[in-house]
Image (cartoon, rainbow over all chains, first blue to last red; front, side, top):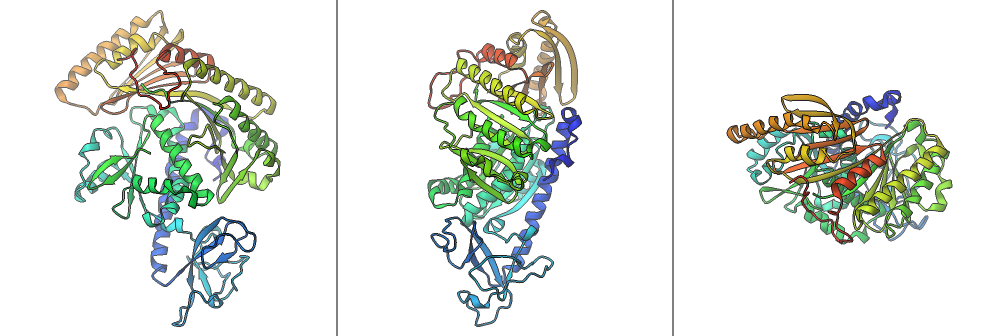
Amino acid sequence: MQLDEYFDFDEFDEKLIPAWELYFSGQLISTADSLRHRGNILHNNLKRSFQKFFQCDNCGSLFSENTEFCTQCSNKDFNCRIIVPHQIDKNFDPKNLNHIKFYNKPDSDIQLLTEITSNISKKDVLVLVRDENQIYTRGDMSISDVCFFDKDVWYNGLRSAKIDFTSIEKRIMFYSTVIQVKLDTNNFDAAIFTLDEYITRYLQVNMCSDENTYDVNSNNVILFLLTNTDKSFSDAYFDLQSNQNKFIDKVEYAIKNINNIFRNWKELNDIVLPIEQINHGLREIKL
Amino acid sequence: MNLNTVFYKIFFSAIDRKKKNFFRSLCNLLFCFSDINEPHTKIKGLTLNGFHYYRNIHHSQINEISEKEIAKIDRITPIVDMDFFPFIFDRDCLEIRNSSHSKNIEDLIVTNENIDYKLKKWINSNHPKKIIKNLETHLRYPFVKSCFIDFNKNTAKKLPPGPYIYKLKTNNYDKKYEIEIPEYIDKLKNIEAFFDIKFLQRGKTNNNKDIYNIKLINKKSKCIIKQLSEDFIGLSFYSNDVKWFNCVLQNHIDKQLPKHSSKIPYTSLPCLS
């Protein structure tokens, strides 16, 4: 994320706006692309049996079950990781961790982890790894269908899905672009974290920082949030907020951040308008 | 009309941000904002966030952060009890949010000046390379037929005196006038006539997709009006000059800002509707 490459600071004043816009669309398209790509990898690999592990945020130790605190460093923050056994024999018992092995040979999509201080013996396990040796987390799985639409194309999609958008049609008359994101309600804490990290932050920084969004033909954005179940986004979000204490710092931070960002968009005269689907209709999200 | 927040934005060069001393003085500055903002926004610490990086620090831990970590950080937010962040530092932009929540207009103006004073002092002692600072606020009010005409009569007249460039834009129309406020405000009569015709046409053809946009520019201070949706109009003020900005606040919002209310109210802007 070297901003200097996109900026010529000597001509900061004049060239600020085009640079931001280019940077923004590039970032968002690549984010959407990589999320889709990751979704495919996970979809293919998770057909095989896998197990969730919990990794200490502080020292990196792995545990097969979620514990209260890390036995190595007594830290309380854990992230859920996914580990796929390399050779699945019939007798494989996920609890028997002696079968697990850590590789360091780089493979195309599935890479094996090199250095991990662990209380699990390093045998026979294949770990899915994304860029920079980060293990796949629940957050990667909990967000999908990140798409960029023109509003008319989006309308066509809604019509064919028989979703009634007449209630909101007047409200979004002057918007031209739609960003669609689908969230997993079963892992909603992780989904919120990923939404904050990958989507809302880029929108926040790049859509709201310049006054030319007030030009006649400016591209204001609709953020269309879907869930994989019947539950609407705001219902799931309020449920999550009400038991906030159960979550790690990062999720709490993400919730606060999203509250702030949504409020900010509202104050900047709905530069980004978040909407959700509810019973074959659409509704504006008010947090 | 709903006055929400006055945003105070400063853009730095990214090269400055990665220097150790600069980062430390920035953190120290950020802790100061607990005094300027309302007393209940006590800043307990800072959350440092970046690409695969997350850390919470207290005031005493600022010096513990190494240069490697500083390179990773691209976002600083305060740890506060409430949901509202009084400031956010994101990549190269520091955004200080002076909320109008439970403040009257005099408080708001004094706080603006305080923030400006603190920042000027900090900039003078740290000498960051390129810096752009900007104040902005955004208002919104319901759309009525004569909005744009009222804009000329009331909003434009009340702007601080001086030469202005008046830019008028719709989807297929773009024009520029030079006027002096308040002496030559009558020049705007042409524009009123233009809008009269447009609104008559709108009634006939039902061509609702026309978006209107007016800008009044004096050096780096701007006043922008834009139709947001069929029912709402947005009015925004931008300036790098605190005096200009406070003058605008006083002329446009005075007495309409309710004192010590628990919720941010929606009221109408009398001078416009």
